[in-house]
Structure formats: C-alpha cells, structure tokens
Length: 236
Image 1 (cartoon, rainbow, N blue to C red):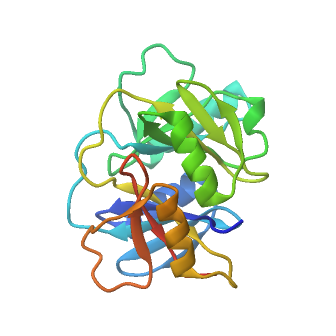
Image 2: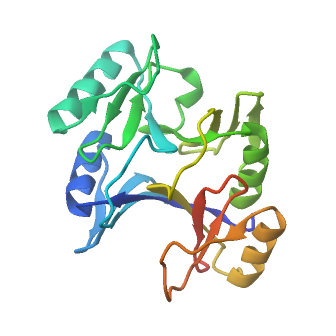
C-alpha cells in the first residue's frame, strides 16, 4: 500500500469541546489536546482530528460519520447519549429510514445506524460516508489513495472496507459541491515512503493541487476528482 488512511479532520470553532463530545459519544480517548487542535481515537491507527477555524459551517456536510449499533436497544442508547451530550435531531431529507440523523454541537451531521452485521468488525464508527456524483469512480480513486479494496459497487453507492475500522463509502447525491469541505480525509505514505512520489502518483490518478490557505506546511493539499480536499502527510 503506497498511502493509507491516517485520520479524519474536522473544522471546529472549539476543537477541545468537539473532542470531548466525540470522545464521550464513541467511548474512546482524547489522545492529545492543544489550543487549536485535538485528537480523538476512532480505532487504533485512525483518529478524529479537530482543527480550529474561523469560518462557520454552512449547509449540509458532504462527508459524515455513520455510527454502529449492535441491537435496537443499543441504537436507542446511542441516540439518547448523543442528545444528552448536546446533539440534536436534524432533517436532511432522509424520509422514513431505520437510522437516526443527528448533528453534533457544531452542526456536523452523523447517523446512528440500526444493527447491521456488515459493521460488526468496525468498532464504534461503522463508516465514513462521502457524497458523490459518481460513487464507483470515487471508490476507484480512493482505493488507490488508501490501499483499501472496493467491496461493493452499484450505480448509487460503492464501498471500501478495511479489516478493522470504519468502511469508506460513497453515496450518490444530486447536489454539487459548494465551497471547502469542513470534513476531510488525510492519507500518509509509510515510514519508508516518499511524499513527492506519492503526490505525483495521486495526481496521475486524477487528483489536483488546491490552495485552501495552507501557506508553508509539511503536507500537500490535493482535491480528488470530484473536488473533495484531502491532505497527503509526510511519511509515518
């Protein structure tokens, strides 16, 4: 695998408060906290990283988390815990579905799924879900970016699965991307890898370099073929 999924980054007005919410909801640890950043473990090798930004969120996020439950009672418990911690129920046009759509204290949507056997191995987060115009094409690109195999393909959805940890899923939507995503993925080469070579490889797969105001940093900011920003970190 040339690059692997390293973390999921979330823009935040208050990284520390967001970390406390998600740590309590997922039942995992806050691994590090600074004035402008905070990290929460999802599973071993994958963190939620909250970074301080000044711009407020507008509109529905194109990337969100689905949380796993192991029974009907567990789903109810998760929803109740989330609401006690400050989440609220939201309507994103989901209609009559067996999952519950919520937003965290800063408005980031997430779903608490009904029990599904396919997510029994994932830990507390079942999937990272990305809106897509062409789910299959997006899955092919992100398979190259993460090294994860494509395990489901359909005109309306496609999935990448890892042995332990959340799936990466693409779901067809009609709405176009507008503005910078508030939630994005980071990938990283292995410790003996080469950042420049991996960036060139991903550009050959359809990624493009983008400027999101990053200035002088050690990583490279790219956008996937549908314009979703992501970072290629230094080898680790």
